[in-house]
Length: 303
Image (cartoon, rainbow, N blue to C red; front, side):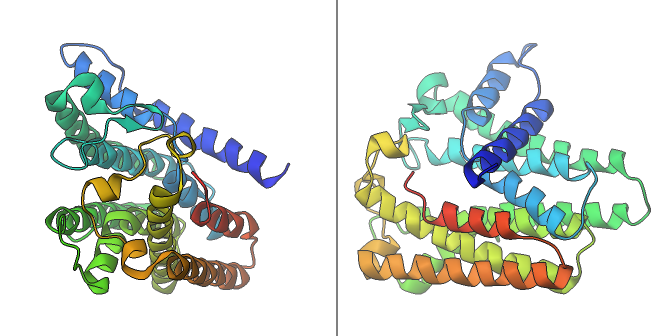
């Protein structure tokens, strides 16, 4: 089986896990549950749960305790997309080739659907305690929950989104502030995914720190590549409107440093992340070839 076939198999597996944990659209709250389903099951790369599972395996994890966290990280990611697309934020009408949640369900229901996915993510992740097999599992799950909440919170993704919003119409945003936005708005959930994989498999503090560093490299490179594609890609390739950054008067790494330097930065960060993964695999005496190829493919994607 080639890499693309293997990736698709793992993507579908992650999606099936998400589908299992999402609540059914029924009862008085059916409308918001339907909007949650619409947002979460609208496709996508399922990058974060796939990375989480691969890092779990990298450190020898073999149990199903990872699955509630795989679903939870994807719920949090999709809640953030719902809110990003709102008129008060990026005001986008197209996501993954379909109407955005606010465009289909209205702004109020989109806000509630995002809120619901965030809350349900932690309800889902905490279900891992019901899957405990050894005493060692309890502190690992607790630590994973702490990482998830911190990386999704005001010192993580929300913090990055806050600075991003406050920086609109500011063409003089510094490189330091821009990297803060990228590290938190985009990289934080990737860091969380890789760190949680290591934590639940019993990785050491060094292992967890290494995954955080690799996740930061991947996340920042992923965002810079996203900025490159927003400038050079097409709506057909991306499944969403291009030129969004220009429309919203946002400073980007590409605008700050130019296309050539931005592409070089993506390459450098990708190489550093892959080196961390290779060194980890050597230490664990395991194979990280799929994980390394995945990193390279995601960072250098065209859509």
